[in-house]
Image 1: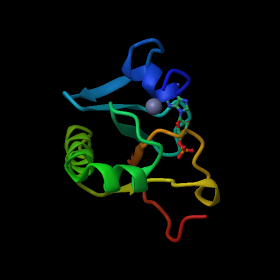
Image 2: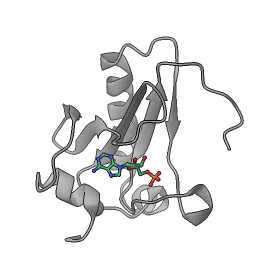
Image 3: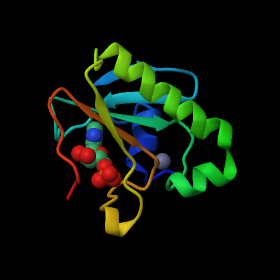
Image 4: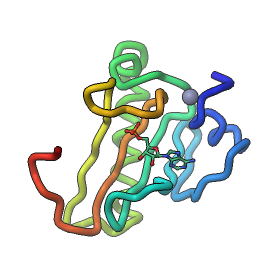
Length: 113
Ligand code: AMP
Ligand code: ZN
């Protein structure tokens, strides 16, 4: 996916503020944070959205959540955090490469907008 922004970050063609990296995942700070802690966790392999990921590779989907937990631990989010996977136009997905938002560091309201 040569024109995918997050694939370019995976390939180090575009810099990111790295938080954690493993063989199959990358966690980096969101460029436009919506909370004191706002980190994106992505699989290095390109999938458009979570439906595609879960149909094609359940292990990779589970590993994404494991990476989310590691990020929450490393950021000391023991008071709580929110994981958001915006999927499709109604949810405002703006980057077509699976990414989990990890939001925390403040009290988060519910329901979201
Ligand atoms: P979404 O709108 O759910 O698709 O989320 C995409 C997120 O990517 C947004 O929160 C953006 O702020 C974030 N974003 C866009 N470009 C970059 C970048 N170069 N580095 C880090 N985060 C980015
Ligand atoms: Zn991609």
